[in-house]
Amino acid sequence: MHYPIVIHKDRRSDYGVTVPDLPGCFSAGSTLDEAIAMAREAIELHIEGLIEEGQPVPRAGRVEDHARDPANTGGTWAVVSIDASRLRTNAKRINITIPERVLDQVDRFARQTGDTRSGCLVKAVTEYVRQSKPKHGPSEKARTRRRAAARRK
Image (tube, rainbow, N blue to C red; front, side):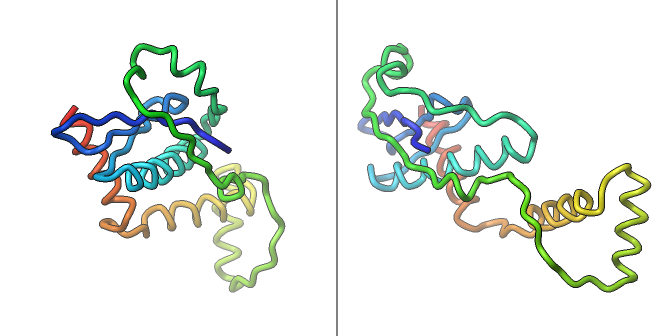
């Protein structure tokens, strides 16, 4: 997947990046290379969020079409390539070993909630991973940079 980005800069700010196809997705960087790298991470995080919320992932538009929008004038255009394989949502059969006691708990919970065993396990693992992400890892730094860049605009 290739998403066009528009990069703006004035003398007193970092490079600010917006992603026209993903409303609310923006980033920043102190250099052009950093801005593009941070945009890639912002796009991936934004798409992950859409998928987790069950929202459709917008298709990437054409630079020519976005360039006509007055909000994008005066910017520099680039295209960011996203590894779509990291965003797959199709199910894959796996073989795992779970203590029988835990499996009984999963089955009981799945019946109570009207879910399947697989659905219950996927939701549990997804929530565990979401809660276990480092609070101050690169993603948090990227979000902080993007917020700071937005305030400077």
